[in-house]
Length: 220
Image (tube, helix red, strand yellow):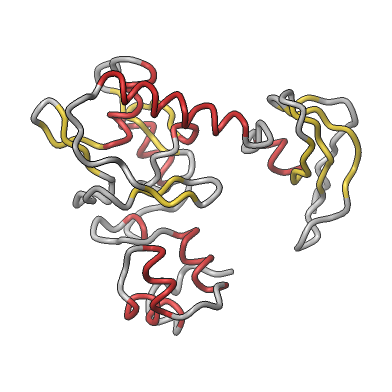
């Protein structure tokens, strides 16, 4: 296994590496970092190198506030607020329906559209022709703006094949769960009813996951 080398003083987004930190659970190397906002945080080296972690969390919070401010200014006719579960990384919408393709839906301009497209256009303007809003996290129910990027249909398909996301679990249009949620469910110790309420599914669905009758392809 190759060791990811991180040097003191290097910057990754808003984070500046101060020193090496104790290894995290699983033996993952980590670094103590200072964020531009003044906060100190410990980040896995792999997260820094991949660009997955760019701040202590302040950037994500700023994006969330910006989205809420923009939406409240431009869309005054919304009656039902968008409610979601904040998993610390993905924002999983639980207030709106999911389409047959697995993506959270939103109605505007009298049309059914992906909520990710709605959010992108509110934050960045009109989406160019033949471009799609793709998810870095591969979670179609996620509405975290930091996880969105634009790509063509061909690029999105190549990304799907590369990550082996075809016809399994979360890629199924009727699925209400996703891979990261399954891992958390398998690790959780609460009652089936408590866990089911958190993920907006039935206790029977949680039982099927826990007993490995479903989602067997996801491992901890």
